[in-house]
Amino acid sequence: MITWFIIGVTALVSYMAFQNAGLMDKLQFNAAKIVQGKEYYRLITHAFIHANWSHLIVNMLVLYFFGPYIESYLAYYFGNKANAYFLLLYFGGILASNIWALIKHKNNYYYNAVGASGAVSAVLFAFIFFDPLQKILFFFVVPVPGILFALVYLAYSYQMSKRGDDHIAHDAHFLGALFGFLFPILLKPNLFDQFIDKLFAFL
Image 1 (cartoon, rainbow, N blue to C red):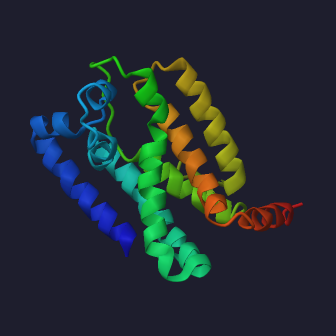
Image 2 (cartoon, helix red, strand yellow; image 1 turned 135 degrees about the horizontal axis):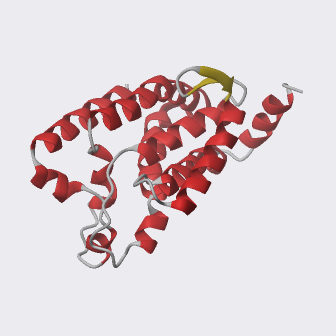
Image 3 (cartoon, rainbow, N blue to C red; image 1 turned 120 degrees about the vertical axis):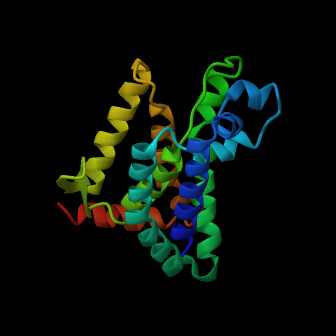
């Protein structure tokens, strides 16, 4: 199962980075070093390290809960291409989530970011696309329909990104989520009709 493989690799690399500040510095997202220093690997590697244990655990829990469902949906619609498409979703979420930060901070050597939040948001929102009325636990406590969770999540991420005063990359959450929602449509456009049908089944 690809979800478990990603969780395992991420946990291992994050643990190594917790023990080695030099590794953390080497792998984290830094737009200036990517653009000017041509350290392009940072576009991907930052998603496999995390700021602390709580950051790691929350991201991996979300991936653990929703990743297997996405694997199943992709297998149903795309057969033996499912694994490749899951990886494309995950790594595409990593790249898409940092487009704005790459542009905004290309000359700022002091801006750093770590974590798989963009990729995990992509997986979560792909799930919401496939099953928009499925209940999701808001703050891991309050069950709400996925589509309502999505709207609140996007609005919150957008507003917090504009404020930019809490050292969290809300723009990455927003862009990763948007990519995850659009990804199935890019693969198979008529899936959007199914999304609409499921959405209006609620009414």
